[in-house]
Structures are given as structure tokens and as C-alpha cells.
Image (cartoon, rainbow, N blue to C red; front, side, top):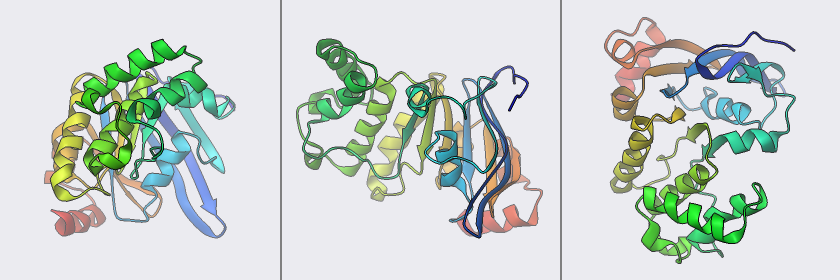
Length: 247
């Protein structure tokens, strides 16, 4: 499988298909996320948004198509190598409850990157400080709010120094009053030039932070473009109907 390099594009998918039995979840998805930009994927539940992220990070393998990182197919690489270059934050925090915040962040650094403990600890504290939680390094996740736990999950992903960050509905499991802090952290990352592909129900975030918004329905990208254009002048009846229900 060979594909010509896509210059200036950090992440791309080409004609990605995936089915679970008779259920065709992805039906020929094409996208391009230029380096140092943020793309938000919106759409109704069951449209394939989260599945798409899992394919990009090779938690799922597509039936057909390709996933590119800096123009190079990643489908034949070791998935662990890819995941050192692509960080992912899930809807649920997936922190180890019996380990401290510090240990949750250092685990990947020592096990996957092979860093010595003191170097891993220094990196962990740096990234916890980035998300405003260095002072919580020695507590366990159960003593944190949901928003704080999600920010620890972001710090854990950032500590691996990824080139791309994937966010899968990172605020949907949070109480409304906790959403703002997580979105602020994500907006700061975008402003710093982190390449991000974000599945979200937060339309305000998509409109204010993203350079590109993709609307998915029934496993396809129905419409894509700059956020102002999509939100103010959607071209398809399906996107118009969706926005009338969520805005």
C-alpha cells in the first residue's frame, strides 16, 4: 500500500472503511489535519466519530483504506511506536486508582520510553504543572474531581511528547461545572500549536478553537470546512437539521 506524501498534513485518512459484522460504521472517510491546527469532528451519536479516532490510533484496524502520519502509512508499523507519536484522551479517564497521580503519568515514560525514574518524574511534574495539577502529584485519582482527573489524563498523554493529540469526547462524562477547565486546557494546547483531532459535542469550542470542522453522519464525512462557514451557512440539509437541534 503506497500513498504519495501529503505535505504539511500531520494526520490524514484515505477511504477508511470499517464494519462490525453487518454494521458498516465507517464508509469511506477522508480527512486531512494540517500540522499545528485543530480539527473538530461533530455529529450525532453513532455516526462513527469515536470509531474514527480509534482507527487513527490503531486501537481498531480498518477493513480498507489508509491512515497517514506526515504522509506515511502507519498501518504496517508497530502500533506501540505510533502511540508514542500520537496521544489520546478518552471520555473516561482510565487512570489507575491505586497509583498516585505522579505514578499514573510516569508509567508510560518508564515502560514504553524506558526513561529512568528521576527523568520520568521530572517530565511528569512538568506536564502536571502545565495542566495546573503539580500540587496534586502525590494524591490518588479518587481524591480528585472529574475535571481534575481528565486534566491528569491530558498530562499523561502530553508527557509522551506526542506530535498529535486525539480527544474523544473528553468532556462528555463531566459535570457541567467541570467542563470549562478541561476545555480551557485544550484551547491552550491548540494555541501552542499542538496538532489536535477532537471529537466533541461542545459546539462553542469547535467554533472558537478549530480551524476545521467535520460533520459526520452514518459513517461518512457529510460536510467539512471552516467553522464559521459550517455553523453560519451549512450546505447540506442534514447538517442544518443537526445544528437546529444542538444550538
